[in-house]
Image 1 (spheres, helix red, strand yellow):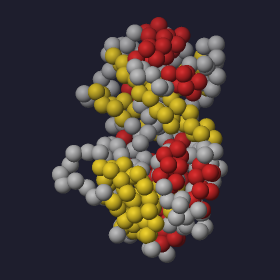
Image 2: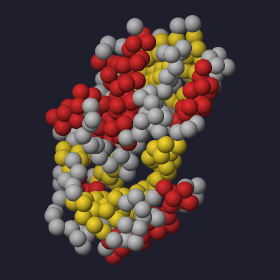
Image 3: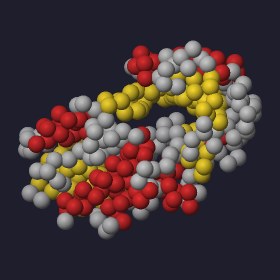
Image 4: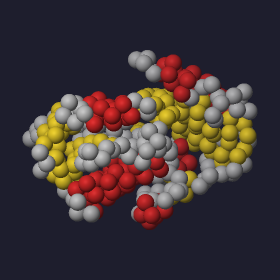
Length: 349
């Protein structure tokens, strides 16, 4: 039996697992995906790295819990200084003061790989049910890969951390509600959490000078909008790289646009629509050499839980965490992971 099983290898789950591992607990992380990091996602086309999920990290309100010093010292992150602009609903572009941002030269997935160092991670493993044991939990699931020998169909642990999107956490925690009625209360609380979907477009422009008309400097650019009907955010992603080979732009849709096209089987027309909308910033944006499109069902938290972690005093060995706890995107996910680790260590005594 393990001390802790962490379900979900996203930013929050890896943060919790790494902290508990360093404190001496036996920890196993399980995740249904083949990669690590969840929305810390980097797509690679040959030697080109493209961040199509989490875009960057920002300074933390709690410096003690911040992973930034270690990630900067290891050169996983470095300061990213794009010129920043705000896009209005009628396509007017206004320069805004720059923010303190940190990008990953090798892609944001490098952050996840660093957080996973020395951890035992079982990938391609989908958790389907939780069953209480006299002194812990049994996690039932299904291996989705093709490895030999096949991993076990169950894991057992003294404590469980559920670090997956809230809708998925409801389904999983609900499987144990017949044994612990208190879990129905947790599921009811999770139902108040809502997300905004996002359609991400990755577009390459070769060696073209991918500049905006208003741009003054040479360290790239970033455009954000809270009011545009189609566009939420776009940036010259290649400006994060040490030696960019091609100009690459990453674009995130508005929540309203994503809701309209989310279930379409072919997202290429949606991608072209987004690039056409972005062409108000420069005609060249509508004519990339290549384009890829990705959908994020749980892109950004719209309504957070409003608590540091998901927990119940009667069941201290089951904890939930994610950016959906207090919001805050990547920084919120890390904060929740740290708090989940503290609560779990306290429960294990």
